[in-house]
Image 1 (tube, rainbow, N blue to C red):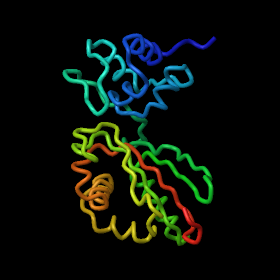
Image 2: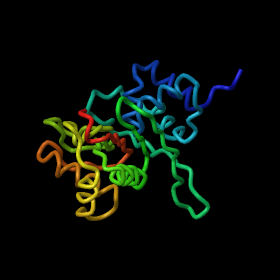
Image 3: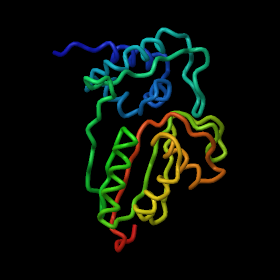
Image 4: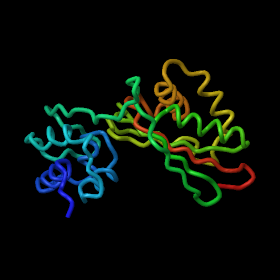
Length: 208
């Protein structure tokens, strides 16, 4: 029988104090699916051990939805790096869904590449971006681990999305945040901490 990882133990300890997977995920900056897999022993979650340890050693009660944990400094998860010290690319998860293709990416550059491929095929895209914190979103203040959906109704021509991105300033991560704010207008304010992107591409002659 495989030995239980430290991260798994901390998650189970937090569950014993009333935390659920979603709350632990919001506190540590990752999605609840990953926390569930670690909690069930399916993954070791070594890069999350410092964050989970800090949370487990605190006396903080489970946070309510949309709230952060006060007074607890939770370290950010560590990431694998290349020999040059840069963050290593994470494998994409791609799957066919209905009449299109969903590509999940952890980096902004990889997400942009997925949109470029869709543009080359003359497709439309729907984009979902996850941010660590949004100061105001759809009437709620300080939303953490927020998923922002763009171009929900019918999608947007992928080439036009590239043109939108070309008009943004700063890093790609900031560019996606700027585009999200432009598309959603006043319903989104100050998106921070790009965490991942999901691109759904499909042919324009097929209604979605």
